[in-house]
Length: 64
Ligand SMILES: [Zn+2]
Image (cartoon, rainbow, N blue to C red):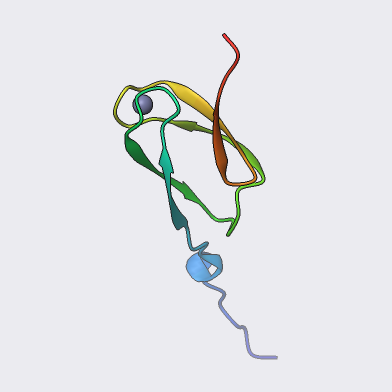
């Protein structure tokens, strides 16, 4: 049996870039996710640095 070497990098995940409008500062920030649609997740705004929630591709501010 010939030994087959598997590359660890074979299973590379392609990250989709999702542009979202920050619910705090209103600027566009890009969130990278391997999912085509972000059902639920947290992201950091690259402009104001605040964390916001994404539900079904809709950005929402977190309850303070
Ligand atoms: Zn922001």
